[in-house]
Image (cartoon, rainbow, N blue to C red; front, side, top):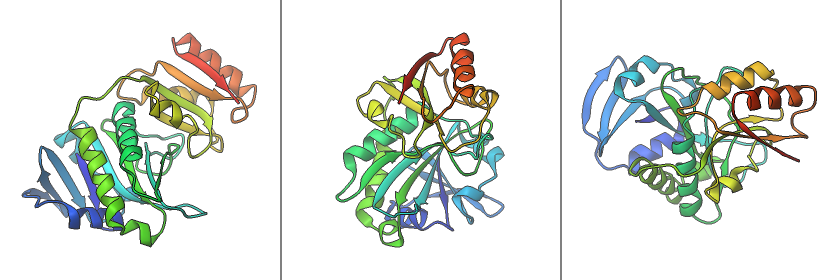
Length: 250
């Protein structure tokens, strides 16, 4: 399903550009509409404020949140990431997120770049997978028709076909804009949670995040400079004990 937030300018641009969406029902102040084969959940708040996971569970297993992207040094960007403030992360869908990321990189208009971001900010889900797809990074880009249309096409393309191919992978200790994304573009991995180097986590937090994926994580890319010993050694040991192939970088 697709989640649109009336408090968000990119969601509002999505609504303006989308084909007519028949109303299926209302639940309180939330509307459930249909866009092709997919359900669209429209609520009045911000994307990070959505808390009605019980409603999402009744509609499907995977939710794509449409949102704006902001950054300290703004530049035109299309981004994808799983949400969740560490260590309370959402369920990540590496197949879906990476399929959307590849489509965004293919469809991004000039001068937009594409990026796979680290897992960050609410909401946190426990049953439904959550994927944020964003346009950034200022008001000018949030309303850019070409960028929003590229986002819409990328989501539609990823939702409308069978996904898979890369190894389901966690990335640990990377930059906020993951450098492992190039591996995903080559089709080698499908990225789930990305633990940024600035996150304060324990080895147990990493293991809990590993469990919050739609399928078993088979590989982990661990950045030496982003995860210092003794934490790095403990993370690597625990992952290997669980059958995860670990690649060290940096």
